[in-house]
Length: 82
Image 1 (cartoon, rainbow, N blue to C red):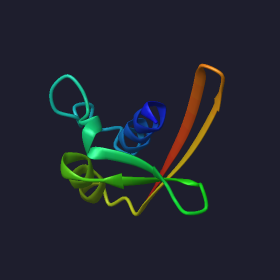
Image 2: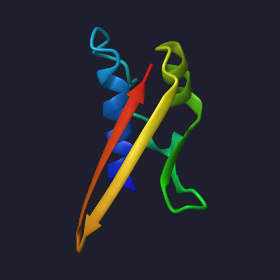
Image 3: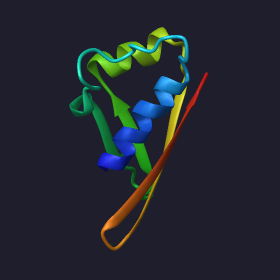
Image 4: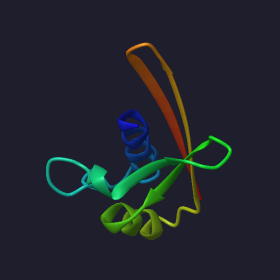
């Protein structure tokens, strides 16, 4: 799920190309991004704290995430919508 959290950060960041210092300090607060599986098994995102503040400030309305893995490798994609 680490890959999904990183994908969420990149999706939100790409929504604000004029704000290069969107995340404070050395990195984004990954503990405030929760990736969980819905009853159907689909991944979903729950933001809290600073990531949620950024999401709302940018006027975003939805985050979608996809996760896939094979053996030791994982890949994820996230899309942020206005």
